[in-house]
Image (cartoon, rainbow, N blue to C red; front, side, top):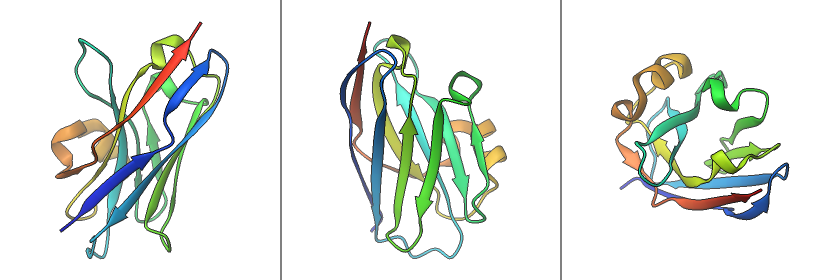
Length: 128
């Protein structure tokens, strides 16, 4: 059974940085595509960044040059380094995984329908 567990959320002032982690367990598929999503109160969940088995990445326009997605395949861990944080980045952040591989760009374009497995989320709050 695939399980995802996020950590690293918290409160930070605008301009600050955080690094989110997502430990993926029980994942036995050869190729993968993992992602970070976020959902702010009263808004729909939106894709933030994706990464595939080849290490290719894709980002939503609103986080480009500020966020970096990465993975440690040996540790089955996904990361999201967030810098220059803004109050509008305040949201619950979720990691997600697919049952098989997909190119990062395609997965970002499809959004949450491309992913079967989800973590419970970690809250990020950015104050002005």
